[in-house]
Image 1 (cartoon, helix red, strand yellow):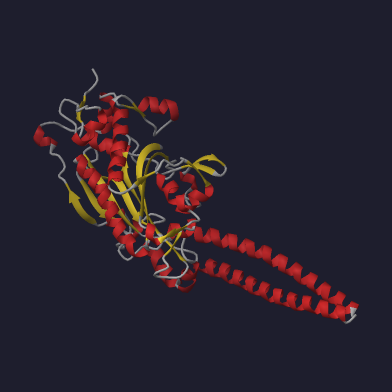
Image 2 (cartoon, one colour; image 1 turned 45 degrees about the horizontal axis):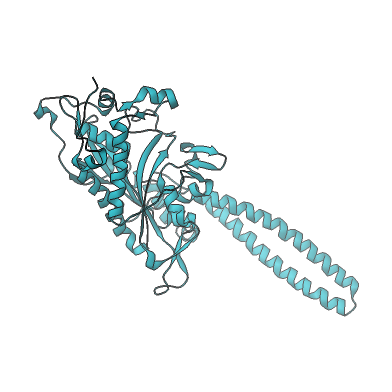
Length: 430
C-alpha cells in the first residue's frame, strides 16, 4: 500500500507511475474521499470543542443555581453528541472506502525499473549456459509431457481423473525427483544463510491482504472458507510472520525460506501452457523472503537473484535474466528480475524464478516496522523482498527436456544423485 500522504502531495508522480504501468488511478475520487474525510474530522474536532465548552458551563451554572440554563446546556451537549456520533459513523464509512481504494493501487516502480509497455520490452541482462544442440547429436528432443508419460513418472490422465485439468500425478522416480529437488533447494539456501520454516498453507484473509493478493486477485485464490485461503506461494506466510511487529535494526536483514505446496486458480491464464507441468493449479515451490533496511534492499535483491542463479548453475541448466519493465511489473513490486530457463519444447526461455523488491509496500499493509535508535527516532517500515528458489515442477520439466537422451531416458544431474538414492538415469518403461 502506498503512503497516503505521498499520494496526497504527489498526485502527478502517481499519474506518471500508473501510466508507465499501462494503467491509471482515479485521482478525482481519491481527493473527493480524502477531502470529505478530512472535512468530517475537522467538523468533529470543532463539535468536540463546543461540547467541552458547554460541559464546563453546566457545572458553573449548577453552582450558581441557574438550573434552567444548565438544563439548556445539557440539551446542547446531547445534540452535539448526536452530531458527533453521526459524523463518526460517516468517518468510518469514508475511511473504509478510502482504505479499499488505496489497497487497489499497485506499487510505484523504482528508478531501476525500465519503462516499457509489456513483456516484449523487458531488457535482457545476461545469459548463462548454451542450449544443447540436439540436431548435432542426431535426434529430435521430446517435450517433457511426452517424456513423462514414456518414462512413467507423470500421469496426466489420473491427475485429471482425481482433480480435473491442470493437476498431475507424479510417481516412482518422478515423485523422488520432485522431493529431491525440494530438499536440494532448501539445503542450498540454508547453507547460504537462510532460515527454514514450515508455515501453514491455509491463511486468514488479512494475511493474503498483507502481501497484496487481496482484494485485487481474489479470483485467482483458492478459498477454503469465507475468510481463509490456500496460499498461492509461501511468500504470503513468510512475509506475514512479522505482521504487526517492530523489528530491531540489528536483526536485519532477515533471510527466510520455505518449501510448500502452492495453489492457484489461474483464473486469468485460460489457454496458456495447458500441456505439461508448467502451469498447474497445485505445485511445490521453495520460496525466499527477506526483510531489509531500505538502504540495503537493492543489494539484497541482487543477492537474491544470484541465489536462484546459483541453483540453476549447480543443475547445469541454461538460463537468462531479464528486468521486468513497468508495464509487466507485478502488483506489489517496485523492481523485479525474472530468471528464464531454456525449454527445448518451446524453443524459448520460460520463467522459472521471479525475484522482487517490494520496498515498503507490503510492510505498510502488514504493519511491519523496525527501530534503529542510533539513526532515527521511532519506527519505520522495513523493505520486503521475495523470490522463487525454485519451483520443483518447472525445474523438473527443464531437467527432463535438457537432460534427455536419444533412447528416451533422462540423465539425473549429478548434484541431485545423492538426493535420489544414487539414481543416475530415469529409463523409459517397457
